[in-house]
Image: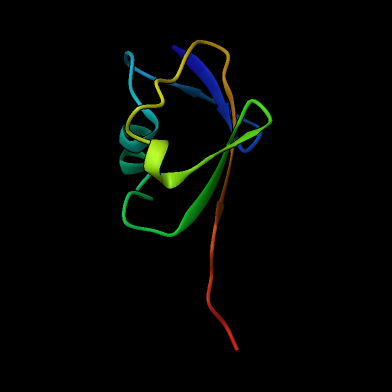
Length: 66
């Protein structure tokens, strides 16, 4: 399955949900905001959000600073 993450093509071996993708990208334990096809996906919906062919994701990681 082909998707785009932050403008870059990604090929996935098979169907997966957003939580699984974040783990694959080593972001599973990070504070991130995810936009899927122009809509924000709340963290509470990551496990229920199944990715589909051609999906466009924007993933932004929160970074603390001072």
